[in-house]
Length: 445
Image (cartoon, rainbow, N blue to C red; front, side, top):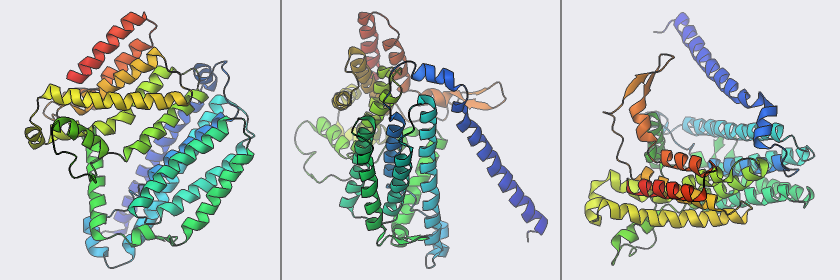
């Protein structure tokens, strides 16, 4: 049996380990607050920013945090624990405690980002009362909504609602309509809290946990474990969204099977459309708050992450050789077909971004083209080769798996190099040739 001294040592070790983690996070979080003058000169300078720019950052953060929480990825339990607590209330209380933790972490991050943006922009603070009220109402609405167990149709309503809220509140924040309309949004969110709280369960026993079955709990745990292992082994392609069933059984029947397969793969990831639209608003808000940031970089990075989920079918083919035999196509044909779809997605995304005030120039167009080539290169790369670790010793004595990092950078390096060239101020003809060459290289290699 464990002695008292042993238990005491174990507790002290756990507390010290967590304390070191907290201190490391606090040190990293305090870094942006040093040298605010230089940071403000680099991001804002003498350019005019909207008087309520920080409130727009808050609204964007609230929308992203709400959407993330409404995925309900906290509803899981380890199969071993489930075997012992299946007929008790322990698992429900544990999931409820986890919900409170993930909810607090998300909205603390939103408050931190808003504070950092406020200090950098140094604008008016007359939005502070309505901002605090909006933060509290939205956080409570996300909490009580996540506690519920909606049907399949209501999940789409929740996701779209989080998107519309972020855009509506953000538009009101950056225009001259006035803060009175934002108080109306606060009131609507408060009404939503009262409505959603009915039937959401007791504080420590959310309905989403008490009604979850064994199969759902184990399946969610398996997905979480797969995500953690993917990050641990730097196999980030495994984090791409899985395909969902399509209501069109004859979509793959007929001619042009390859094109049908690529389109079906994009439609099977249709849930990523909300994230793509949120990235549109994120680019627009960052452009308004930090006007000195080059829009070429904002568009390039945003288009890359917006289009990446819709090209996941190519990564699926690379992982499952049987699909390649079924398709009966060559690798260049598969890559070019995927590139055509990704290019359409990035162009449509760029046009939506232009509607929110981001300039539609040669540079932003080339950034979208670069993003398409980088996406195809990313999803078309082979599986991670763990025999090619390429470990090297860093100056501080830690081992760095350089071989795995090089494999991980396959795709983003084309985007970064191209964006550096696009924003370098070279002649437009030179920039066009280099960007086209990089996009073609990313597509075919």
